[in-house]
Image 1 (tube, one colour):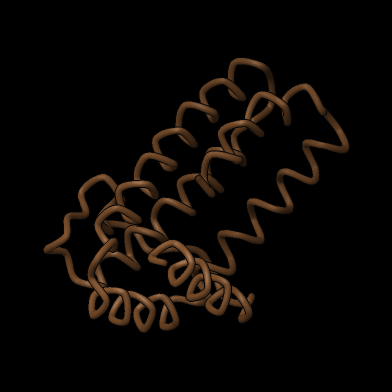
Image 2: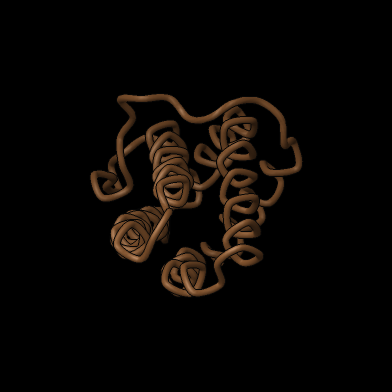
Length: 141
């Protein structure tokens, strides 16, 4: 249920796909605990999505693709930690959903960067896309 609620909130937040990237100095997903505020959780989500987008932007060859995969793996661990912190806390989920809505532009911008870069890699260098693709898939686990 937690994952369904969070997924629905994230989907709703991405409907507004304008604006610019995340802010610096935010909490990352691995620093989040059950005691974290919904606002901190939303900021961590934006930071992890921006981490993925930034990693993909740096992919130019096999070495950089492997480095990006490692960075994306770190983001996936942060996302997993965020999900676990939200489990069993209905009020925290509501607070996080409201905070995610407030960050919809940042979330949408990061997701658009990820999609655009993955499309570009798929078209121009499928081998590099394959190196990072498995880690991208872990983001939704």
